[in-house]
Image 1 (cartoon, rainbow, N blue to C red):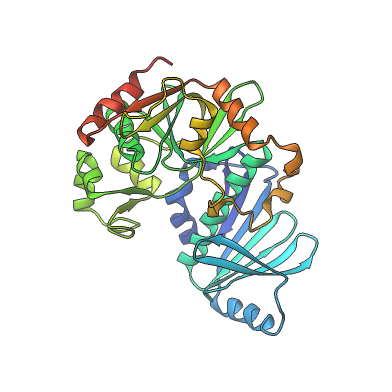
Image 2 (spheres, rainbow, N blue to C red):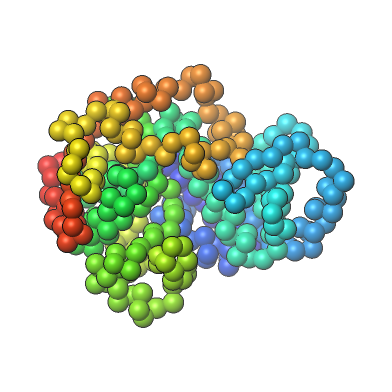
Length: 348
């Protein structure tokens, strides 16, 4: 077992695990790894021990859970509280892992290495989002890139071309990727706003892959960590794969200098975007399954109570007043190269 440290921008953590677990997690977390963190906010321990999983499940067979929490549309956890900040969580539909929590430590015991790594990555994503909330931030439906030290948030409804434009910005304009679909946006304290990437797989339609010469060549010639056609016929690539294929580093965060909203049809695009428009295009809404703090991490990260955080209307108004917003429209996929060039060439 070895230990690695991660600066997640919104908080810090250490991960103790087998080297094979670390290698799998690196596909998502390489941009966040640092040499040392003296006092990590949360310590994450991951191990593969199928017998231990069976033993814990057996010990709880006749004990009703204290709560049920949803971590994913198809995943709920049964929760047993064993003390202050001490909990045991068992997945409701599978028998492949168990999670235990204490004040600043989260342990995952899984039946195999890949499961331990998968759950570990999900927990780190939770840390980034809950840490953002502790800073009065929110997860927004947008990607983010850094161009010569200037951060650009790229948002829009599903199908607005975010992934294709982000890919072109990295491949054709030398941008560094921060996030592809989910970004934590939080105030920095000096009037600026920070974008912290939530590491997720990039998903491409076949047309999207063909729009990038490097992606098309790689998908045809190499074995991918996530495989082909996993969801809705789309190809999924990890952040590390994107970095290697496009030969540009992924970075953990950037200071946001502007927001670009992509609109597929020019109809109805407002001339001066207001907070309501911004929220409509970037907010995941109440149905966001990532929003639930299913590990009770807010309390471990000293997050202020909800009553002390900005209400949703004020928060979006703050963003709209602090960061320039530009709307770019397109109607045909052949225009996406032009849109990416407009994003890259806009005044910073």
